[in-house]
Amino acid sequence: MAVSVQMPKQGNTVEECLLVEWRVKEGDLVKTGDVLCAIETDKASFDVESTADGVVLKLLANAGDLVPVLTDIVVIGEAGEDVSAMTAGSAAAAPAQAQAQAETAPAPAAAATPEAAATRPADQARTGASPDGAATKAVSPRARKLAERLGVDASAVFGTGPGGRVVSRDVQSAVDNGVLRKATPLAKAVMAETGGAAPTGSGLGGMALARDVTTASPARRRDDVPTPPPVVVPYKGIRKLIGDRMLQSLAEHAQLTHNTSADASGLMALRKMFKDNGADAGLPNISINDLICWIVVRTLQSFPEMNATFDQKAGAITQYHGVNLGFAVDTPRGLLVPVVHDAHRMSLSELSAAMAGLAGDCRSGKINPDLLAGGTFTVSNLGSMGIESFTPIINADQVAILGVCAITTVAAPGADGGVVFRPRLGLSLTYDHQAVDGAPASRFLQAVAKGLEAVETALVLDGAR
Image 1 (cartoon, one colour):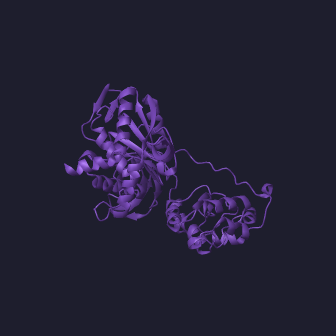
Image 2: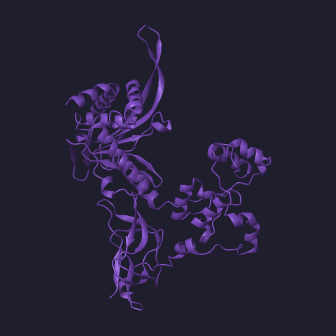
Image 3: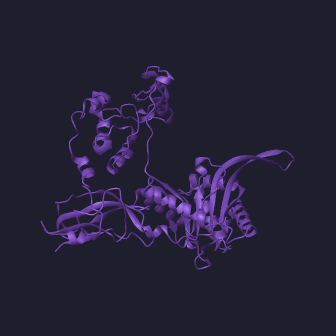
């Protein structure tokens, strides 16, 4: 008897998943536990396994579709079994095995038409390089991962998959033939300007530098350089999920941002001490961001109005005694915000280790969706990117979020009446004015700044307890 396999529910907050690619096609024989397809949420990647033995009778969704959880996606049964009753009302799935076939089918020996052959030189057809460096329209997940591992740009590869899709064999072929080599950002800009290719580089590890490109490429007039066609990026999948949540946050919260700064001398001195001697003290790899988050957690315990969530529908503001700290992580899939639960119970080293583990799981796509929910306050750090001030957007139903900015050198009055230069750390606090007024929000931000300036004292007191 035929059975259907559903889109699994990945965590309590996930409502739909992106079907990335099918690993089977209609007519395939599968066993319980075999991988049927790969899916993604706005948080992580997963494989969907078969729950029955039999033949794949019908695929009910296409690769690239956003599918609600607990919706039937495939029917498995005996060969020739009538499953029309089980697929009635569902969107008839177009052949979805094209992507899987693209990864295994042999590369075409020549272009399909004379026109295509004219625009694809023989050496590019052999190596998989893009004719003029223009980005291809799509890259398969497997090809993208291979390109990241090899340190090359998949968008510079000529795709031989359906619709010009770049598949893994294209990336490997281009690398094997030396067409794609690592290059600095300036060298890539020169290549785009001159139409040249990355030569064997004179930089570290064969990295192509700008001078390598200018030496290898003939001079060309600016108006002779072909302009790549525009690339249309569909607004769907993970990008749409993240965008919808940001828009919803702005629509539902009266967001206001206050900016200040803190003397970062103590932070920088402490970071240097940890870097030089931390391993001996059992505190290796403690970063400035770890210290900031630790101070924020301590400060929140004295400001319950900031460590809170706001439910508009219920008309209730919930203040928490414990701190579940969310922190923004930039990943290849987009922005994720994992949560360190019970962060107020952790020492500095425990908090640092917990954040490092969650960030690693986010970047590898292995994060448990439940660990991206339940936060009571969030920290977003853009300081490493040189951002001196910004307006972070409040996450989910929280009341506030702290933006951490770059450390800049600022002139200040010296003790002898002269001028001294001190490092200052920028801080940007966005809060929901529906739930918190400006004065308590300002007092909290001031307390965070003072805590950061006295971080060494805070560590001593914490160790004494």
